[in-house]
Image (tube, rainbow, N blue to C red; front, side, top):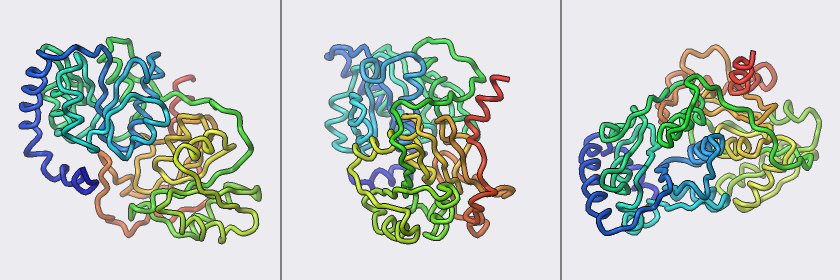
Length: 356
């Protein structure tokens, strides 16, 4: 399924969510009669890499094994992380018919972690067995066909929201007001300060090279920097390294090597997006630039992490359910002071407040 087709599903999600749920339940009931049950929890995660990583963190913090106890349904764009982590997964938009055939009627308990779009509930129910149970956030448009769990779309960190949903599905205790847990390093530091260019394909997160350079210099305080980027941003990363001068080097990596680089870095500077969540998983301290995004939901979790965010804007954050509307304030969130606008990660502040 091409990427544009996945995006177009959002346009028909509202009118077709109920239909998808009815059809999905019928498929699951019919298929389960002829198929052996898979006793693992199936987690339907049809979203970005950040959601997948947050859900994996939540599984681990509940004391379960994301490789042995869970089967994952992901989008193709998140499959690289699933492969990197050895997660048993199916990319539903890679070969949709084959994915449905592999999943239909196999799982007695299915969790849909999609926060809004109800078409995902059709696949959730199709993967379930007759008499099985499906769990979903109450904000999901198809959640009437599931056991519904509350979801805070505004401020609660996503690892906490996923933790609550998974705990209900597994019948595990979960504190209702639990803060996110700070993450300690999983790998020793190699001393590198890593700048990972990201977010430039979103207009609200597309900062200029001068802004990136100013924020990077303030963060590094004279220490050497290494600049990395995904293939789509490599030309910009070259320009940024040149702007930073002799103290900066450029590296290019495939996905697995980049994850390893982030895991071993002394610290990471990046835009709100995928590299933040990779760093959070590995416990690498991160300074994250936030513009339109919800820093409470996606704040870096590693001990020592910080955010860079313009203060005092009536319009910020404007992203909701992962959807960002056209700017109403001339991208005022881009006017970042690389020193004055730095503050501790909200996730770490929430955890510290809970310990008081």
